[in-house]
Image 1 (cartoon, helix red, strand yellow):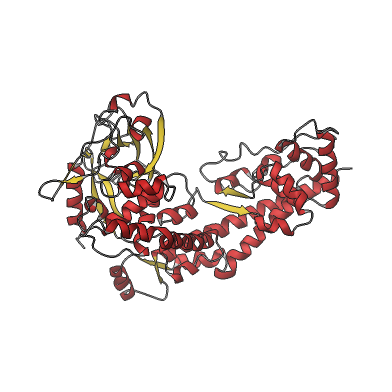
Image 2 (cartoon, helix red, strand yellow; image 1 turned 120 degrees about the vertical axis):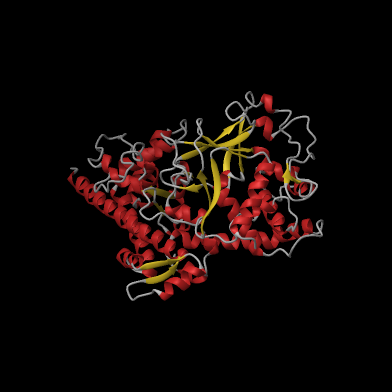
Length: 548
């Protein structure tokens, strides 16, 4: 494998040959953990650091228009055998195996392994036991393996028979690699409709990068958008997922200094239908400063699952709580309750962002205080006038839609009878009124209040905490492990740190460290939300007992 500097030089030549303009930045190797990144190398007055023509992006349209893959993939796509995302993964898988792939300078720059949980060793995966991510990883890996064995392997083999220069036989890891490349690097891009669905064009025309006559560099081919760029301003916007070589080397930061934008007309960058990197800094960037973007407000669960890293102390972390749908059949009066849940369009799970705690009984003081609890309104309508709005309503951090689900599941026999009577009265003897979700939620709250739902929530959170702690101990145990951790990012790290190891330190892989950071955060959030639920339950029961 070529060294990073040689690969980078070839890639930069490839970008230049395909119309990419590095106006205020360059791409450099960071380290074994981050790979390559984008760094400022000069001040630009308009803040435009990088411009990439979107004819270079890997999109579903690109695959269908590819002279090598297109005919076969188009037939599969039209028959419904593959979807948009799988098209792009097929291209990545096939082109990785082709010795003389025109995408080789780009593909050689991409990681060969990833830090997401699909790439964890069995030992590393055990560190996630009891978490939502452990089960999700097991299911996803089985799903991908099944997709590979039943569909992808034969398609790739068939495509490679058309190319006598393929380097090796396809294996599952090639597809796993393509899946990870897509999910860690793809952007959802707003494109002009006329670009996505060009009219009066030969759909077989290639817009794939081509090698020049010497085979050493790459030149642009004619693009399908050339005759449509003048109409992009009038066209509708279509959001398309795809990979944008160059832009996708920006790393994530909680405080990004750049954003990406799309220039449909070319009025901003001079390059029609392009994506550009725009500085968001208030003052000129320091030379050699890394240019970061935000991947979005994502918790560690999503960051680790998709991108292969976590952020210790992530303010965007969240906890997922769910009531198992299969358990509905085991509760009393399951059929009647299932019907009520269906009318309510019930949500059986909810995400609890860490920032919700700032609005609760025990504020934790994160940066986004007050932003996530504005829409959590309980039903205040009361048929009898006896059900008062709880005094704690403004401090209740749990989403009302999920609370409505739990109220329904927790109903006792007498409460279910009262709710049914109220709803029958509302519908009328001739069924002249159709029940709405609000009608059902109002009736259930009128009869049941919050105590039953909060008790069920407390039970769910208790079980979650027990599952988390069963295999890896308490939050304090994780804290001690992290305090002693010496992270190994490469074999060189391992040799160096083993030589300097002491009883006060513990060597661990980056994956293991990430798993412990994630699960510790889940334990912390479960404990804090459990504390909120228990306090709300105490207040609810006190107020309901006080009602004459």
